[in-house]
Each structure stands twice: as structure tokens, then as C-alpha cells.
Length: 412
Image (cartoon, rainbow, N blue to C red; front, top):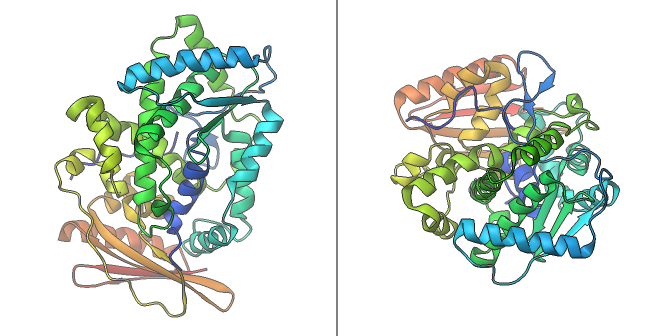
């Protein structure tokens, strides 16, 4: 297996509720389809940094003259024509778009960012038990602050409305409009509002989000290529000014890791689809999308029909199950990366075949137990080695190898 990711790529640019490793990303992507944020961390210290990863933030939207409704309507019509031509599909109806200044936009994002507080609290407890959140971390507060400052635009598939941060139609705002209009076009033809993904226990929501965002990133990049050198520089300058008001050091790494997955790895998967059959192959993927992070990370195997997940029986729980689902290949990487480092975490997680976890509460703590199968015996040995190193750093964790499977548990 040769997944399309390595240690230079793995750091990013949301009862039968959605599993912990995808609930954060799914909350973001389906409440706010598009306009995500990708933050890159250097694991050699605690200082956030950026690489080549994309971001979708703006400096204060008060810069420049606010666009008039007529100017916005004209720009949306022009950019819609570009998107339709790039996708080889017509818009079935015009898209309503709104530009909001920083304060109004951030308030709207905050209102929509956390819709299912109970599910989010369960996710917070699971992530804390696995050592991915500290005791003082409040996931709802982190998401609200992170998204309120960080999201640039979103398309709401429930209403068909496109909302963008930015009072003026700068080159960068226009690229964001192209991104969101791609969502609108795909929604009109294929439907992005899929409630069954919200209720899934596995990674289907996360994988579908990678398809949705990967395609929008691809079309946005096509549009960037049409800009003049001056406008491209202006867009880059706006993009480089992002995040100045966000305290990145206070954000747990797991949040951008999960939110960033569709944006970081979706474009590579969509590029593989396009190479395999152009726009119509991408269209077909909306009818039969990927279902695991492994399929997103290794699209060649997925397209060859060689990356179907193994069904793993749930491990036993020592109490009433409050959450269950699939960690997935990406979830295993996220779990192990802090202790093992990126390269070793990649080696331990690659070869993932399937898994299932359960979570329960005991006294004042939450416990998680997961069983994982791998593609080969060698892959299983690598994962066991990685998990044992991870468990050694956690006072309340254990690893139990079995015949063709490894089960691990942690409480916190």
C-alpha cells in the first residue's frame, strides 16, 4: 500500500451519534459547507506555523469600498459562468449571495457552528479520554472562537444561500465566491444535503466532505490561474494576512487536524478522479462517494476497488455505550502523531483495514475501547508497536494484541 500522504503532508493547511474522529469535521462541513480553515503546526515545538497549505481567511473586511447589491449580483453571475464552464454543467437556478462585514459574518458563523451540543460534549469526552484534549479544553468554545474568526464563506445546502465574509469584491473574495459557487452547482445537480451522513457511525461523512471540498478547491485553483499577476499577488497578500486575531497557540491540534482533512486531502483524491475520467468521473463520485479516510488518502486503491473497509465487531464496553464508531486511518494517525511523530505515526497507521470503538462513562471519567484490524501481519505489528509507545505515555491506557486484531483502551 502506498497512500498519497507522507510526513510532509499530514499536518493541515468536524449512542449512534457521529464518531468522535469525524464529528468535528462533519459539524463544520455540513453546517458550513466550504470556507474552512487549515492551520499547520510544527511538532518540534508548540509554535503554530504555515506551510503551503491553503487557508480561507480574510483580513478585516472593512478594507475597500463595500460592494453594492448590483455589483455583487454581477460578480456572482460572472463567476457562476466560470464555474459552469469549468464543471461542464449548467446552473439550474441563480444562486443568492450575501457579503457581510466581519462582525456580522462572525456572529452568523458562531450561531451555526455548534448545533448539537450533547453530541459535541460526548465527542469532547472521547477525545479527552484518548489524550487529544486537555482537561481544561472546552470543544464548543474552541470551535465557536476558531470558526467565528476563521471561516470566510459558506454555502448552506438547506437554503441554497451563499454567504461570504468581505465587504468588497477583492481578488481573494472572488476566489472564495468561486469555491462556494462550486458547492452550489454540485448541490443543484447531486445534492449535498445528506442527513444519512450525519447519522452514520463510520467515516462516510468525512470522506464525502473530502469529495465536496476537494472539488471546490480544484475549481477555485483553476480560477486563480486565470487572474492577472497583480490580482494573484493581491489575493496571496490577503491570504497571508489571515488569522492575525486568532490565538492559534490556544487551539488543540486535534481541531485543525480534523477540520483540515477534507481541504488538505480532498484535492488529491479529486485530481485522481479527474485523471481517471474528467468531470464526468467526478460527477459519478457524488453518486458513489468514498466512505473512508483511507480511500481519500489512497485514491488509486479506491478506484481499483482494493480499499474496502473490513467490518470489525464492537469490542466490549464496561458500561452503557455513549458513543461508538470508526476511528479510521486518519483517526489512528491523529491519535499517534503527538507521541510518535509524524513519520512513525504514518508508518503505524498505514495498512489500516477496519476498526470499531465504543465509549462509556464510569464515575467521573470516560473510557474508550477500540479494536483494529490491518491489511497484513506486518502492518499489525507496526500498529501494535505504535500503540504500545502511545500507551506508555498515558497512565490510563492499555494495549492487548490478539489473533489478527489489536484492542486498546484508555480512560480520562
